[in-house]
Image (cartoon, rainbow, N blue to C red):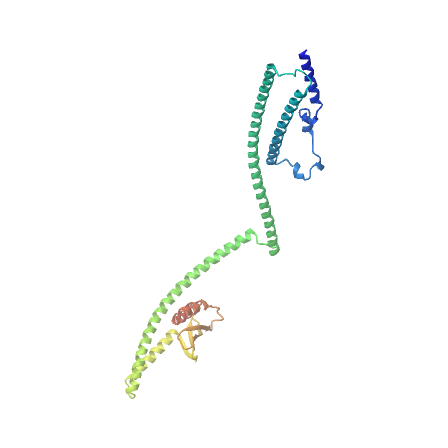
Length: 352
């Protein structure tokens, strides 16, 4: 009799539990929950349904698991409270008690569920490990693809720039353009011309060296003559002061005049003219290597009231086209007048 009462109480409790809120029946709604899809109007932003990013998926899964655990705990708590209240307020005189068999049955079910949960956790851990490995490979592939895309973009831009440069070159240099054969032929001609010029330059350098030696010897002789001239002039001045009628210096004067004439003939100096206080013009007659005589004029301009050479001008070689600017500039910086005149005369004689 007691067993029948307990059986009726359990059935009434089962019926009451089934008739309660249907939202607690999660097991029956798994299929519906899994097959449910959001409509485009259910979300406010397209990014809410974008689950392609693994990081976003992981965050969503973690939040959903936490929410379901809280929901499960609340469900179990509410279910236990509901059973406890119903057992207290029931009209059955002898409420059903939980027997040792029921506890063993529940313990057995609990052990089975724990084993299933353990197996599910191991499977989930294995899936997570595979997911991490795949994620690392996907990340590496993504980095490689990104780098390849950047290189491809850079190469495409370089190709466009090269095509634009080629188009500008074609517009700047229309047909007929220089071919490879023409360029090779021109290169061979230039090499031969450079070789000929090198040989000619060696000959000219040898001639310049000889002229420098000759000029050096003549300069030394000229310095010696200048020294002798200064001594003679001093003696002449002394003789003029005390011995105006002394005729002993006449032969010495004649010798000095002859020496000056010899020097002028060696250097080709024809005339010396002082145009102003700081300007001196020297007229030379120079014989070149072909035996032709040329008359050149060298104008020396000094800084006023000093012996500093300011400028020099050469006339008479315009038809030959010899450039004396480098020789003039080089000696102007050192104020080397003798070296400048020697260089000008040497180039005039050599014809270069």
